[in-house]
Length: 109
Image 1 (cartoon, rainbow, N blue to C red):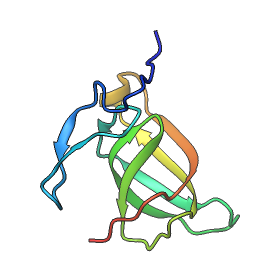
Image 2: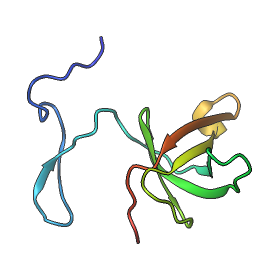
Image 3: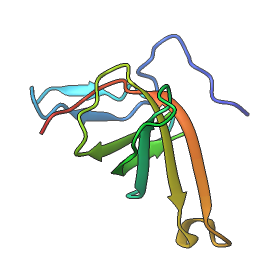
């Protein structure tokens, strides 16, 4: 049975503390995130001969991926992302996942 959204978005959503304000907040994501640290190859898919750069995932979901990289990216940048699921995850053979997406948020460190 598929998940349904009920009128109040906070129903059955875990609560956590915002590290900046120390206030309790409700998780707003609609899909579960999986903590996976995988190497990722990133490139601009709008530029045919663009150079690729490497990064590392922090977590992934069916709707997105959180990754870190030394490259300067801008919100809205169109990306082609390739990551490899290791044998420990697939239990059979290596699986490569390739997706296109856009940068939604940047967190500078």
